[in-house]
Length: 365
Figure 1 (spheres, rainbow, N blue to C red):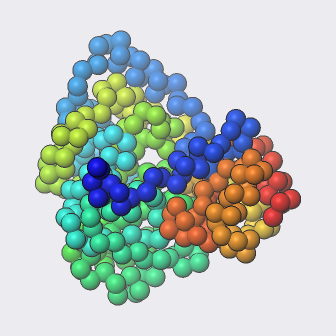
Figure 2 (tube, rainbow, N blue to C red):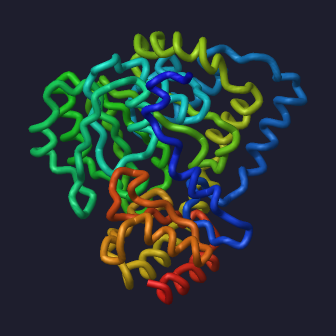
């Protein structure tokens, strides 16, 4: 029989919902950009293939990519890191896995901010940690005074900004305050920053700008439309990287080499692509926000490509999603993210399809 730790977690509700989709569905559940990977990124990988760069890479990733990640992060956020602080991973998913199992022992207390990305809870359960959920307010703000009251004994906080599923982008004051609480209580922050480039009116801040015991998790999937390439990275103190490497060597070993060369080109040449993609997402954000607020209590997203309206007026999240599915619209129940009063919609789909979906929603609810 399988282990008890595996029995104690559920399959991803997001994937279960996707299995219900058909070709004629409007997919407002998808968690990936609907843009194709830029041609210059593809060419970078093809060039690497033609040059025979098809062998194992170093466990930590090719040095050129690690150096470029460090350069870009320093340029954008002034962190003062080097390639020794960078490990290339199999997407952000592996970076989260390494962070969880590299920091948590059985019985350690981990704090997850609710609503949360699904992996934080599942990975914490696999690590047999004690999970404390901290709920944000109705505007998805974190009450730092309340947070400070509950963190005693916590070893790790999972933090995400811009936030999946809410689209919230936390301001400098909040992130600095979180970092100060963590420092005062000797807590590690695992900071999931995979949407750091998909921001509309605000600016991205990282807890690592204010506190050293932070593990940054990021990837090329969202910002560069490279979800299938499976290239991510984590940034941490050198001594943590060396410890996480032990897990990486015996699980993933290394990211495929030519994908890393594609990612290298993305970092060097991708800024204009990101700008155009974010401009399009902003148009869609404005459209879906205007449409959904006719029916729901909804907070305007400041980043990502998600919106998280409260649907409790119409019943449980599952019931609302079932009604949407009956009308060939796919969305994700909020209970997948820890809150059954909400439903997550993604606007990473065609503008006209979003308009069509909004018209249907107005009719059926």
